[in-house]
Image (tube, rainbow, N blue to C red):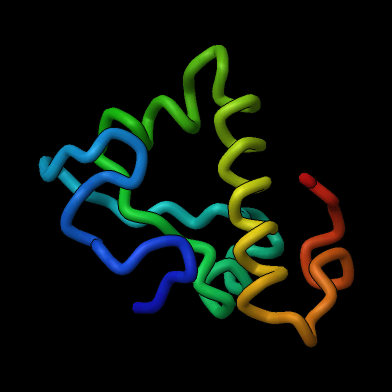
Length: 91
């Protein structure tokens, strides 16, 4: 599994915990497979993963992660168009 976000899948991308690590696809829904294809995945502990999906600030957290992902995508894939692939600008 490759990620343009991190090389370390042993710890949570957000808090650094090594407990109960899960893979989070930064782009979901119809673009989930493209998230995997382009390495837009991060390891998250169960607590942070739940926070991203179920907390009252989940939208803000997700948009921040997507903004970071878009910035890294643009650098990693200068020949690809983010908007064509993911349909929304987060920068």
